[in-house]
Image 1 (cartoon, rainbow, N blue to C red):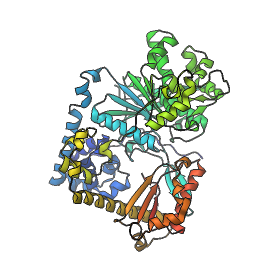
Image 2: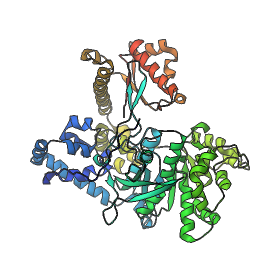
Image 3: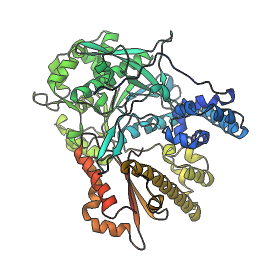
Image 4: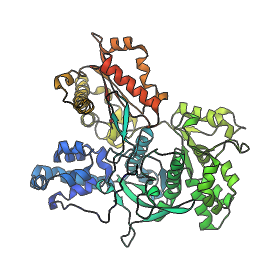
Length: 580
């Protein structure tokens, strides 16, 4: 069924009282996602509304009443906090950085373009599904803190991944809301005349036009392509509708826009990247577009252009199983990529060879991971074990190499510290460790005093954080149960779920079968004994989505919900639907 599309002929901007104009500046930069004081400032405007709008400061400001804004504009305490947050943002953006100190002048000549199909920056920008996106978001934030001259490139999904709902039986249902980008912390890219910047990607019998939006993530710009423009046919307007949605043909269109369109968007923004980093194989077509552009700019042949371009390409793979990589049939690729390949002055069979482990096997499907590997100077996995698995998987690409010498490096995933440290612990660390842990969390000397933190203060922070979690879970669970059961849930029943004094285990992952979320149900009697142990009980909070087409993953969720609600686990286990 067709869904209505949003279109905007103009943007409506609410006029804030002059003393509150700094809110617009703070809302426009996602640095607030890792600055506790700015988050608290937004929450102080309207705590209930802040949660209701998924912590989207643009919507929060737009939906706050004039009366409330007027009151805040005359509140000296609020205005002092606002000015403090604005000053903190200005100081952050202007500060000397690690990269500037380590590589003087290099930021003027170097740009790293980081391509990914999803970015998990904040729940207010719902263009991610799981760990790949959260890692990509953390990379942008860490690059901002370090001052690395990086730009992000992705797609702007008008319906996101999906919002998860469970029916009364515990079976996952998918809901795809229609998002309004003008109500997000985004800016539509425009040229000098004020017209929206458009780029074009060639499909078999037509051009698809995309507009480009920019999100500011601290010092890092993130460029996002959106095909929902009036110039396109309705089918093409929907190419960037959903993350990982549609069939093989739709996935191919999305990946052409990400890789080919992404390179064109950078050029339209005046950016010529020194290095292109493909975070998973979804963006691998950028290698062909980059070669084609280099040939056009320098008048050289394909082989020369490829040799130059490969030196500036990096590929990170996250997938531990061959079935997890995107593959396309040659006939579909020929339909969509023939003209682009011809413009690169190579034969289509030679292009297909770049996506096959065995070029002699014409029956082998085209792998985006193989295309990325063959057109990159550096390949890495995301842990030591994963790199070893990847070496085994792709050893046939280097038959003359022993398996342990296949050129796949390991770089273990990390997190962006300030995003994931709670305010309670941040304040404790400030008091006990000083400022170095914020500036250089990677520096072991920043943590030398951690053992000296008084046990009672550390335990109080843990206890209070667990209490916060239990209150949050009970509130969310009551709303979820009332919606699923279509009647009011007795809060006395809700208050018996979870205990703020009990060891709490969190399991928040995608519900793919290979992650084995239901392994804990293999011995239900033993699990119940652990949950309700008289002296050392435990409790478990679970959350996660299954891919819409993965019935096996959905069955895992249903089995867990059944155990919780019908087999005695309710007081000590919770499944939070649509947890973000």
